Image (cartoon, rainbow, N blue to C red; front, side, top):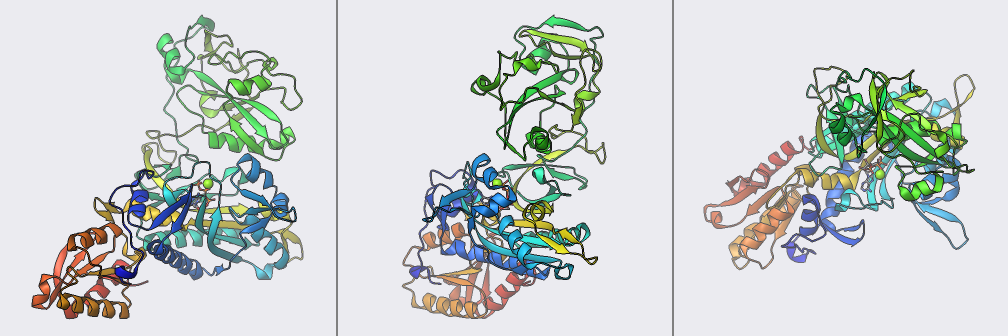
Length: 604
Ligand code: ATP
Ligand code: MG
């Protein structure tokens, strides 16, 4: 492609609305254009990158025996009602774009495709002989994200590879899951990314597990906790650890103390001169279930620890049927406004004890009349602890479970692990923290969708069984931007060779020099003929402008038909190392072929 004929517009300055380097660079270098909030046009250079990423993904998927298909983006609401996710996706999370057609039928733009694929499996899979089966697609997804940002990282329209596998049993699912782990690792290696596979939260779906693939970068929205021995890595949402030991309490006698203005743990510990590990902190949450029921949740946890709200959500979802509901819609710390809706009298916030009376809750049909009391494991073994006295300005000290307070029946792990905690597998290892960009997620779904939607098969014994499912996603457009986030310098993007829009750019320093032009044209033709995707910068611009642009758009190799042509050579510049060397014109094609094949793992 000739730059003189391309839509090639680069910006000198950073665009005002871009926060992270990769977003700025993709805008400046003319890869993407913002059309609306979380909506981007992929311009020709970007589209080439996306096709390269897609092709790598496709090859690795095909190598596992998965088959590509294309599912509809317009999805009838009925499918989502069958799986029980219509309300969650349109109301609770509100992430799904829903619409009504001219026949007054409700539809949605697909944020994901479990429902569609499960219907297909229900209709077409009859027998164990058809299993296992794995279908995938590479396609645009729509999600009404609360905070679309960082360009392609969190768009409202983005490209995803999503695959769904069907199995007769868990064992077969585990095998495909393992294959996907390998396939994903290979994809990311081939794309030239530094990444970490981490244990991830599987949400309320349960299943036997899920793994996220994180591209390591400071701008990542996710926090990963890991140990240096390489034995443990998990998303902070999922991570477990051994907390520091509690300090023994010096309050041997139970008594109520006046503790003015100590509504935070820090102020309280300052005032009482005690360690937060001697305090039982009681945190109030408000859960709303899908049947409209509000449940007030009181979590007792050791004073030095925080509640992991993802873990808490999972626990509360498991309890949904206790409240006559199917699923949890919302979890929040109630503010003053929220309290007006259910509090019968003003709560002693900051001074709540584990036994706060249920009569603080208004008698109201849609509000559960009792607090749901949960205790985190960290608080269970505390002796002679400090906690609230259910009265503003007062705490109790020297308290014990089974004496002044009844230990809640529900003992759970809802503690947030944090850097510095000891690791479970080896207490000598401490957890370290890193930031990551989630580019892939593999998931053992089990029978959640097949059961809800009646997708069954007949096993060897002639019995009808629900299909066992897995699902596997890669954020293709997010991955492409993550590659930039991991690889750039002050001059611009440095694409990994395997996903660069072009391998090489031939730059003519002076287009009025006939010899420069002639050699450049010849090389341009030969390189392209040899399968080396090459641009020709034949614009009537100063050499300096051309070099700057080539650096900015991040093409791996730049060939300059400058002064060296007098000696039958051209200058070849490598974007990543910034090394430059003169190479005989006749050797350019073979040299570049060698470099590219080496950089992309021998052209795999
Ligand atoms: P996140 O926690 O980042 O919102 P998710 O858990 O909702 O991601 P999945 O539903 O597992 O994501 O989707 C599979 C992949 O699609 C993710 O791993 C991610 O790479 C990508 N992805 C998800 N949401 C977006 C988005 N809004 N924009 C771009 N890519 C996305
Ligand atoms: Mg999401």
